[in-house]
Image 1 (cartoon, one colour):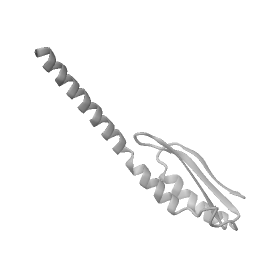
Image 2 (image 1 turned 90 degrees about the vertical axis):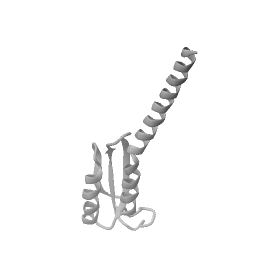
Image 3 (image 1 turned 90 degrees about the horizontal axis):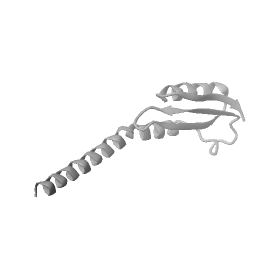
Image 4 (image 1 turned 120 degrees about the vertical axis):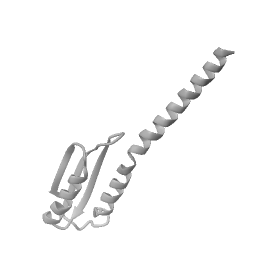
Length: 105
């Protein structure tokens, strides 16, 4: 009888530990979704502005649990406007920055 009770308690403790770990880990990366949405809303789409001649690209790793690769592409009327967009976007990537460019289309 004691063995059955111990086994049941061990199983309950193990399932509680797994449920708690999964919930905690998935909740820690939730701000990444808001960061991505915020940057996308401030990025002029090349589809919406085909006449713009400068393409800006920023890519990197956003730190968190789990860390996540992100990439943003936008089109701009001038190099100045691309650089003005690129600086703040690069600054929001909390991990390693892998690409940050402005080029002619």
